[in-house]
Structures are given as structure tokens and as C-alpha cells.
Image (cartoon, rainbow, N blue to C red; front, top):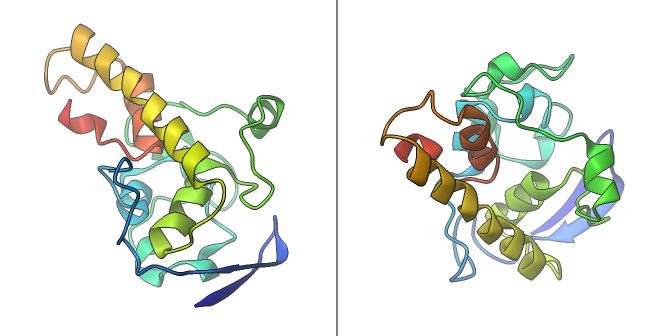
Length: 165
């Protein structure tokens, strides 16, 4: 399936979905949460996906916690800001031109079936986030969601279900 994107960030960007949604992931990439689950739980202060909903399934946004006006940390599951500004993402070279919104945009497109030359790098970045889960396990009682809330929220941003740690 061919997709053409026209939103506030990308104009006439085209890509192809070659896999079925949610299927045939790289064997090393095993996210706990789907993009829809992440949006429903509350990630990125609700601002992240407000202008690109036409690209993704309508049901992803049915219960999504979104704010069309501004980033609102209270919409995050842990009600804390765990994001860095996009300027920092750019400074660190984390942004691929095809996914100018960053990792989550890449994940949404990957989940929907796009396969891309940047997949291996993004999966490596996802795997590196596991260290935060290890820190929560080492420093918090199981189920103590008040412990290390910023790290837990950051893990949610990367499709790790930190509520289970």
C-alpha cells in the first residue's frame, strides 16, 4: 500500500507499507505497547500526533490523550514531562529526515508495515532504553508507580510498559 503524507511537518512524503500492521517485526524488536495503547495511556504531553491523524487508523485516536494547543505533561500517564525538546533530538542526530517527528513516528510507520533503511538504528535505540527498566527494577518495589516516574514515563515513550515493573 502506498501512503502520501501531507501534514504540518511533511508535504508530499511518500512511502510504501510492505507488511501487515503489527506483523513481521524484526525478531529483536518486541515492544510491549502498540502506538494506540501508548496514545491512550498518555505520552508526549498529548501534542505529538495532533496534525497527522489521517496517516494512521482512526481507532488509534478514539481514546488518545491529545492536546491540539500545547504540550501538557498532565496528559502523560505519570503526569510528568519526560521529553526533551526537538532541538536536542536534532543536535544529537537522532532524527532521520523521513521521520522528522522522531522515534515514535518511526514506530507508528513501522507498526503499520513500512520497512525502512533506518529500522536497524531505531531498533538499537529502542533496545538501549532497557537500561532504564533495569534502574527501576534495582531501585523500586514492584508496582510502586510513584518511584522513578520520569524514567517510567520515558519508557512508555519507547513502548515499554513500565507499569509492570
